Amino acid sequence: MTTALTGGEAVVRALAAHGVTDAFGIPGTHNLELYRHLPVYGIRHVTPRHEQGAGYAADAYARVSGRPGVALTTTGPALLNIAAAVGQAYSDSVPLLVVSPGMPLRHPRQSTGLLHEMRSQTEALRGVAAFSHRVSSVAEIDAAVARAFTLFRTGRPRPAHLEVPLDLLESVEPTGPVRLAPPAAPQAPEPAALRQAADALRTSRRPAMVLGGGARAAAGECLALAEALGAPVVTTANGKGVVDERHPLSLGVALHSPAVRKWLAERDTILAVGTELAESDTWTPLPPPAGTLIRVDLDPAQMYAGLPADVPLTGDATTVLRALLAAYDAGAPQQTPGTATRTPGEPGPTTDVSAERRPAADVPAVRAARDDETRTRDARWVPYLRALREVLAEDAVFTSDSAQCCYYGALPHLPVGPRGRYLHPTGFGTLGYALPAAIGAKTAHPDRQVVALSGDGGLQFSVQELATAVALGAPLPVVVFDNGGYGEIRDEMEARGDTPAAVGQPPVDLTALARAYGGDGATARTPAELARAVARALTTPGPTLVTVPEELPR
Image (cartoon, rainbow, N blue to C red):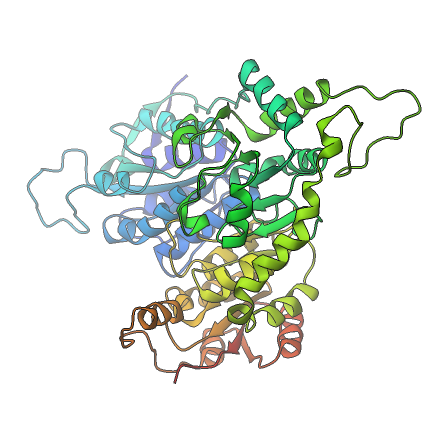
């Protein structure tokens, strides 16, 4: 059977068929046919004040909901506005679909001066997305949307762009039944590699685990393996909280710590799950491990990027780790009747090498060395972060910015467990992520506490999204550590022996700005004041911007 639809309705129908219930974007002259059909197909729309904010909101929505985020833009400058958010989603392996109109089907190559005209939208987006697909008929739209969702479900999830020529959005053409992306078939690891990995872990005396964002869905399996091995766990920024950071085996987000890197280099077996082992997490290149590196990743290409895998296990982390646990247990010595069951992290039967293995004993000393490295620098944030943690629920969602208070402060010092989330713009390192990301997270989970953490410099990249948060109407604390500009760049200039230039900003009354947008504002000069302000904000509709003044440079 065929149905006559406009291109705009075909897009919205395909999105709804793939389970999309929310979209972020800004309507424009060229995309009105998309907006016409959103209510008909039950898709709720959130309107940020800038397309970059729409991209960050859709990114965070995807991270916390487990469903792809969808953003709608119009042509030209609107699409370029969202490009930074698409680049961030690519860096952090986030399933984000951007839908935009494009120039008409038969638009000439020669510039004509059409509104929002640019040389090639698809070429621009191919530089930051996994793919950019321009359709040439209404009938092709279903397949293009299914292509994006197939990527999200079966490969390394990364952003995609769908371009529909603006005349095609309004054209009525025949199309068939909606096409759906096939369900994902979990990829099982190669049996020989699985046995090799299990043998390496079973005979290891100094094991360790490194967990990235790709390990998140396998949090239970990661913890079971860590406890079975007695292996300390260190995570990337995107892996923060996969294993509770208060667990005795956790070293937290600490790949940037010289003490942790030195300790890691001395391990005889490292199990790395869902991580690139990238410089954006380690800050300096990791030295080659002394022993066997086992890598678990959905993307086969990652096995040879950075530190090459000695034992590559390709596939979905949950599937692979379950198989690895079974193979590990299958080769373990059998207990004799009446022998007490081994407590996780404790020595096993005397015939097993785990009887000689006590790597968990390393953790307190490595933690202490890690904290001693930055105690002076981080002292200004730690008391505030402790106070913040105490007033929030275990499943609270934190959104973060590329700010000192976040990568020096919250990433290593604000503990998060598997029930909570911490969303950070790793890799691409965009500024202005925290506030719109908090809006996206709150849209996905309106009943969970969501808190945005930022600096004054980063906040002002997207401060206009306070208006979006007001329209959303849900309680949303926004905690801003104000150091009078771009503190990290100021410090780097001084470290070079340069006179700081262009990094100081005139004082802005951010609390008054929040009130001007229709929200609330407060200033917290002590940790106790921050705790009280955030507790109030959690019961106050709309955003509450809480400024924590830092000592400004001389």
